[in-house]
Image 1 (tube, helix red, strand yellow):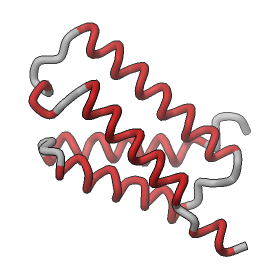
Image 2 (tube, one colour):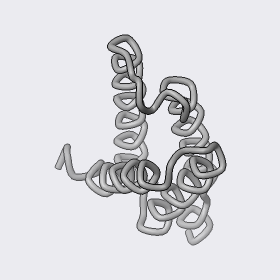
Image 3 (cartoon, helix red, strand yellow):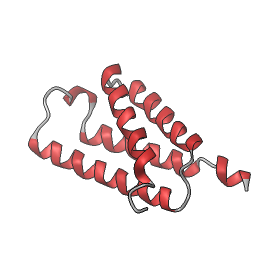
Image 4 (tube, helix red, strand yellow):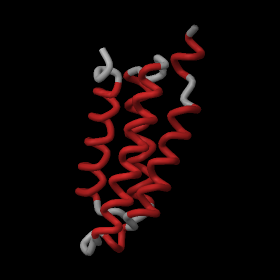
Length: 107
């Protein structure tokens, strides 16, 4: 029982998906000069992230520990990729808030 509560392999996979998608659709050097097409691709990526979070929440795979772990992994990866600290804080805050509300939508 406890093994499933602390198994973060799904979270690590999701964090990799989030970071890779963000780096592809909005690299740090393009932060100040976004384009309409880039915004559309970023919005599509964010929708995929929201769907994956909802699926995890519905399967009972998002507890407090895993939400915090997701935020920590993504934050560390984005800082390491060269994103500005203020952007990272906002993005990770939004991601964790989305994770916190993911399971509430269908109830």
